[in-house]
Length: 309
Ligand code: UDP
Image (cartoon, rainbow, N blue to C red):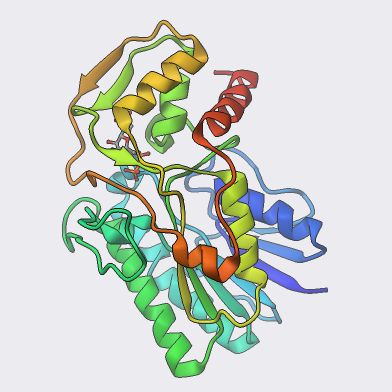
């Protein structure tokens, strides 16, 4: 039986990946410190090691090591900059060392954040980024950038089979919506369901391109299992840009909410536009997103309405 380590396997993306791997007959070990989880999401069939990824050291043979552990929500990582950097520097190093020892395939979830305030839209993988090395988002951006550099060094120096993906704003049922953990979609839906004000940052003209969870999972599974793509770096996202203000209006309409849209202070260093050039993933994985924003939002709203919001 193949074995897989998933760091961050109790998180939003990680728990979907964990279920998929288990359903494919893989023996899964999760490493997760629950720093951004408020509950157990991991299926009981997975082995759970409740530790920070940089504190873990596992012997044994693992066919795959997938490094997802991170704090992706800006309001949360800005408050926890040191922890954010460590899991994506020391943590990445620890997992790479384990991969070399056990000759595992190493798959890394980087981020569209490595492009910073991108000046080329849609952004291809060849774009180097427009990133502050010291600003408030640098703990996330530079951790991911350092990890990419370290992974490529291990690939070149030790011939490690590595794959790096850069996901762009993934959303869907099971995403966290509360407090600083709530990314824009679940936060706006929560506000709309409660008929609270929808808090658009600044003028709301900044854009994002959202990817539904099932599309992310399909691309990720292909990246993990496909032979002959070692050393590849792929954007996994969508090129359909929408402004935050349009998104707010769409969510108010879809939920038939009486919420008012209000403009509050914008975030410092907020990337102004984000859209993925996904032609490379199309060619290499034969993949493209299948779920449009309207359908994805309605599924997410349905799931949130069933909860105790
Ligand atoms: N945003 C907003 N109101 C909120 C939360 C987020 O207008 O209550 C905006 C935020 O400023 C950014 C976009 O939505 O421009 C996406 O924010 P998110 O927290 O989802 O993460 P990001 O894509 O910036 O990593």
